[in-house]
Image 1 (cartoon, rainbow, N blue to C red):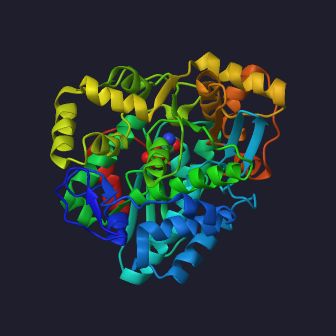
Image 2: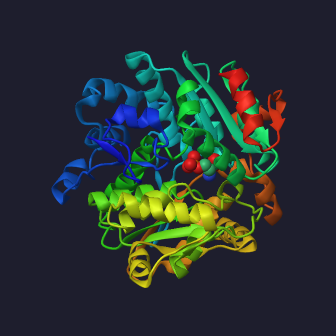
Image 3: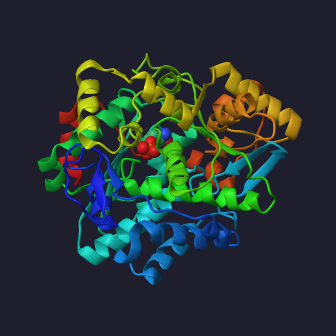
Length: 462
Ligand SMILES: N[C@@H](CCOP(=O)(O)O)C(=O)O
């Protein structure tokens, strides 16, 4: 399978080079040259597969023989053996119309583990096979950082530096990252927002000399491996519900910040998975919902919300979607992204907006509404949602029509966001792994938000 850039100026590369490249060298994002198709017959054959078996099949479509099947199987099996639930991503039924897809049974209690356990192992594999140096640089609004660190901590030949917005992540998210004392981990707490962190790392990756000199590798969803791994659970949920004849009009409701998770659903649909509505749920940082409603993509003022992992204005994977919206025309994408850089705004014409509205249904959830949803579902179903999942569930409540079934993606365990949950007077018992974090010393360096400062830190660390 060959991979190309959304801006069309990178020559075709294989899967492992695509993983190593992270951000495309022309500043775009990597995408597969062709999207593999999955037929109804294949879906039928996949129905009885376990999560790991299914992941192996889906990954094989994108990797083909570049990684021998036995090696790939070992990577996949190791990655999902760390999950606490045998189903890896089990479905929890709330009522006949609504299921929650629990993606938080991995080591750091967030959906990011599904892709990052795999990507951590994949980096180890690539480094052994190709002698590549792996120096990971990532940005997080809370969940990706902990999960990426967990995926590679202590691994020989790999170093990782994560930027997070200082004091803008939850306490548990901060502890998960900063209590790790392995020498190959560096946590930089940036005075600014997640958008500042993401802008810095994208600029450093776009400086191709710097990127090559320091062997920078990506773990954010700019890395295509993240997206591919996240398509698997859409297939898995669909296949479980197809056993109960629930897939006639099956929607997915996805809490969205960086557009990676919902883009994985969009890709699964393009592969042939019959997804009815893709519901794009945002919090008050609703640039994406406004885009779906009005066709205008323009960051608003930053809002600190109860769902901090989604406190994002500029969504990385938006560019991947633009690529398909504009008929896979790299030149058109380059022009639009340049216009966004120059003016801070993208406006699409009416015919394109119609296509967007056929692809997604948007709903933006107010802060208080997210907490009310948590309380309502706790009272009605004795089920505790985290504030991000609550956005997905609130959107599902609004958008699901008669005769439709919606799967709301549950992106994190509620224990990661206790400060928000306590605001509706709900007491929860922490899993022992999370409770234990409170007794550990923390390691992090607080830095300002200039590229030079970060560059200095990286030069010392890498
Ligand atoms: N919500 C994310 C932000 C980074 O997104 P990613 O999917 O590109 O890694 C987080 O929790 O860090």
